[in-house]
Image 1 (cartoon, rainbow, N blue to C red):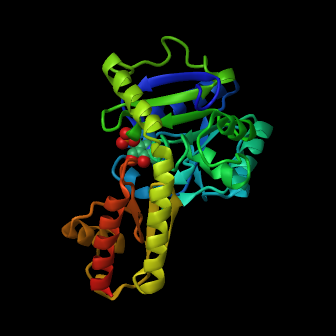
Image 2: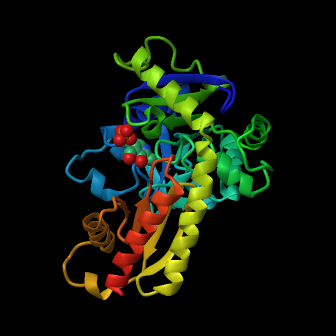
Length: 338
Ligand SMILES: Cc1ncc(COP(=O)(O)O)c(C=O)c1O
């Protein structure tokens, strides 16, 4: 509550399950008016359940599992007019990631978030954020929207003081946010927060799960939060993230035929590869997969994000010396490709 604002949190076991809760919230919200559709974005990722793959804006995850759960449509990311055009009399909610994780580490612009909030208020839609990957201090703030809105001067100082959280929250607040991944620091746990006027829509008996919110999972998540706060890991994510991004941009200048650019917020960084790297030609695999494999062989774990981007999502307690080691491995692999 203190990190977001008045509302309620439902505890579950995974990110996909947290998103299922948001889908059910949207359906309950629109039910009496026959509204049930949720607009999501192209290249999004929202989990592997049947509704999760229906919500995900990527054909490859749906293939083989048709017919899909009805009621989801996808529009271009960060395009307010596309959202407006997709709204139908049956629309109940809009769902997006503040920073698209599988869509190339693409952050939403502050203008888009604020525009979406206004549009959803105007059309009486729920505005839902999937914070499974970009949440829990990964971008340097509790949720990525808080970090993104800082850029627009919505929260003035850099650290995560309470006044700042209020600044960001008063300028923009989604109606629901899903969380998982870092929430349990490796222990399986998910959650979704629902803003106050809607917090009781899913009342007792409408949503539940046996293992959600067990004392063990909650004790682990609480300790993770205490460590993140006492060790100032949000500040660490910012500082080490800035270092990594600067080094990667330096590498892109030095090796423009291998690295096109680097972007991201905090410790959620995307490295976009140049088109047509000769060493990757003619073997049928996406450049991102080939690059990730070479890094793996050299001792660095990363993950593709689409065909041209690789993702760096290191632990929030990454030390500067470890970041330097990672950059040294990346440089070696890039040099070999060049
Ligand atoms: C943005 C996003 N949403 C949902 C999920 C699904 O989470 P889980 O794997 O915990 O079900 C993921 C997982 O990668 C994710 O990145």
